[in-house]
Amino acid sequence: MALLILKQKKVVEAGKVYGNIKVLKGQQDYVNAISKNDEYILLKKGESKNIKQIVSLNKYVDAPVKAGSEIGTVKIYNGNNLIKTVSLKADKNVKRTNLINAFEKIYKSWIKNTKSL
Image (tube, rainbow, N blue to C red; front, side, top):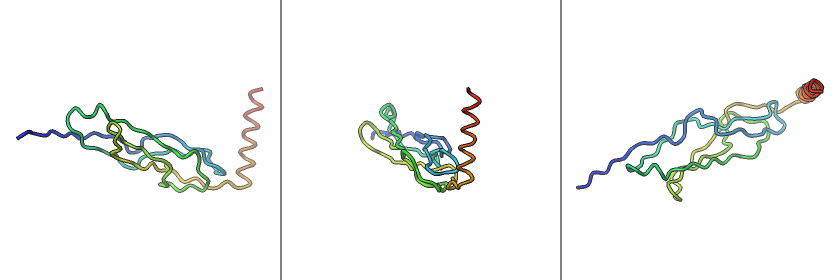
């Protein structure tokens, strides 16, 4: 009888930032895309050479953004075979901007640009 040896491989790390996404009309300009949990796959010995990840992120999100909202995915492939899809979540809440925040952003941008002259 042949003995099959499997090993566990971490393919997604909890809390790791996989990218950031532009927030339209938000009090912050960007939100990070993270995984909430470590994700693992089981592989036969020697199979890990064919593993690849493809990260897909939304181009932007509209405010308000709730922490934990899905904003992307990580797809795990073994060769050309998709073996796992993991959701990426917003790492924080982003409120919709209001008139005061909009003027504050414009003012800070103006100050920053005048200092560089």
